[in-house]
Length: 262
Image 1 (cartoon, one colour):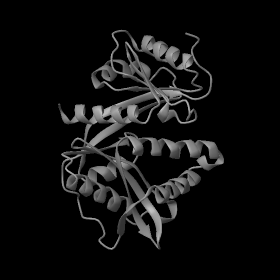
Image 2 (spheres, one colour):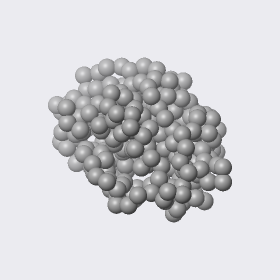
Image 3 (tube, helix red, strand yellow):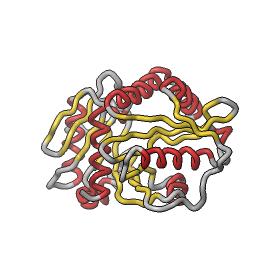
């Protein structure tokens, strides 16, 4: 398998592991977690096989999500060749979101090492949840406490299903920046990189990402990757940290109940 194929397979496996149900369809899979209905990342479709046009695929995944009772629509094009064929139509079809996410693997040494004075520690689930909760508060998600509870529960579901480690930069005894590290069969994904607003601009994200990559290598990972929004600035940081794009994940959908009647 190529690096891209290994990374995509790993991503798909994390989606399945944290779900309550995975239903197969001719076009792909429906990932379902009924106990976490507010979390789109726990309830969505992955499409990897389709011979028709983009509108036909959209109707098929819409129908499956409608029948599953989803209030939203979210679909991930897991096959990059398929995405290359369908994305031009999907990206201009009026979806509420149609986003590209770069899959980036660490191939090179970083442009410079992290600040050695930054304290990086492995943290437990309680400190991880506390840091994540503060980030949700800064992003305005804490206005829906049930959504926050469900997001944290999704983290716990994956941690119960595969090896997950949490690392954090500590400032004045508190979690200031953090990331998750998923490990299995020689592959590692760095995920949920975040720095609390008051601590930004101090190199903390650089430190936690490089610490996570080093820990992954020490744990035997030959492939260390992360996923970054193709239209947002963090990808530039990750490039400076030695990560190069090896593929792309395409995601489209909409919120609410304004859906096709197909």
